[in-house]
Image (cartoon, rainbow, N blue to C red; front, side, top):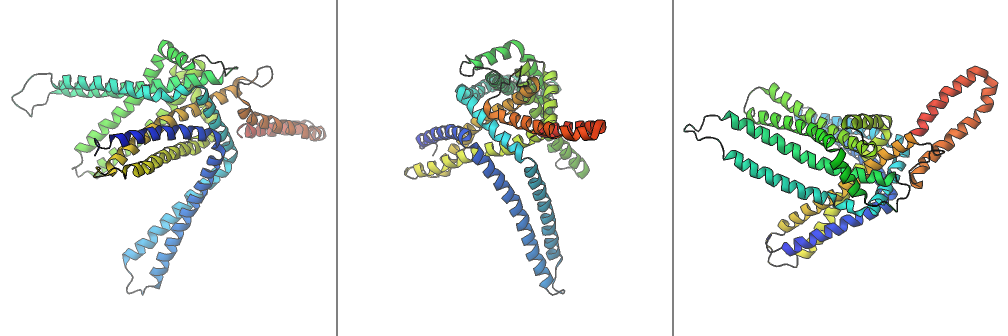
Amino acid sequence: DVMVSWVEILYMSLIALATAILMIVMLKLFTGVVVWMIVIFMSILVTGAAGFCWYKWYLSDKLYKSTDPTYQTPEQADVVRTWLIYSLVASGVAVVVLLVLLVMRKRIKLVVRLFKEAGSAIGRMPLLLIQPVWTLMILIAALGVLLALTFYLESSSDLYQNKSRKRFKMVYLRWYHLFGVLWISAFIVACQDLVIAGAVAVWYFSRKKSKLGWPIGRATCNLIRYHMGSVALGSFLIAVVRFARLILMTIQQRLKGATNKFAQFLLRMLHCCLVCFEKFLRFLNRNAYIQIAIHGTSFCEGARKGLIVIINNALRVLAINSVGTFLLFLNKIGCVAIVVMVGSVIIQFHQDITYTWVPLTIGGAIAFLIAHCFMLVYEICLDTIFMCFCEDCEMNNGGDKPYFMSTNLLVNISLFRSTWSNWQSNCRVTKWFLGSFGSQYYHNCGVQLQSICWNM
């Protein structure tokens, strides 16, 4: 079926490429509508889920109470209790989500503006979209070399008559080689992140964005000349955590038949903690690479600055990572759905295909890979522009030090300045009546208002 339908698979790949490019354009043009639709959809989803759980609890409880006590079973009581727990949990989640969306409604406007800026950056530097292609090619080449080294490694050493005898040197070399594979793959991906972040940072901090030259080439040269050590350190940390996860998985596999349930629970808990720590470390590494691209600092200094920016803009980061990530995921799913639907129409005219799900599955997987590559670039651009925006606000004041940000992002700063100016003008008379105590009181309130406005 694969050999027969290779033309249809090629068509689906081209359709996926065109769909991904179209979605990049739509993200720039209709971001506001899509983002607010997602917010409304999330609100309806969590509220509807809570309502559904309460409805199922009501039906099960009504059925249980209407049953004669002599015929009531423990299973019915368990069903009522289970739906009650589900209802309470769903209601708690709904309340938290609705409160978070209510608090972040102003930050969501910043997310919309950042998406538009990311679209503008990609429009100015369209070659950013092929960076994942180069990364994938380098990864395939590197993994091919590492696979060849694996064959050489396994075919080395001495012959033993006793097959059960452990070759400890070979065991150590296998683990050493596996750690090298993890480190090299993480290093290649980190190089891509730093190149994209460097190009976007050059675009953001350029007064004449129409005359950028070759920012991708400049970012690549800076990576090779200055930042290879920083990338190696960041990828080393990721490799260490992944290596620890593999060791835990190996131990879990060997203890699968053991009767010690506590040890198995402890290993699962440790593995879960390592997964969460790896996600946090990848998030911290990306922001460290962005700081390195902006300031040219070392990895540790970049991670420190990135962490400070994240802490000072926690609600903004939450809005970007929740709404933004969900929006990019929806674009991936939408691309796959379009390709599969069009592919099913194309394949139905091909009579020689026995199982149509085979080419559709391959086409859908290729579509997801293409969409993931495009959205990954968009995600890195989004994070970089947000970090550049925060650094721009920190370094400049809009007066003798003009901002680098566009008019689209300057709206947030204008809103802050107008709110702060209104506060100062409205409390001059009140400060005159209240004297020094009033001056100190309004100064403290003003600092709080300044912090509130800054986080809008």
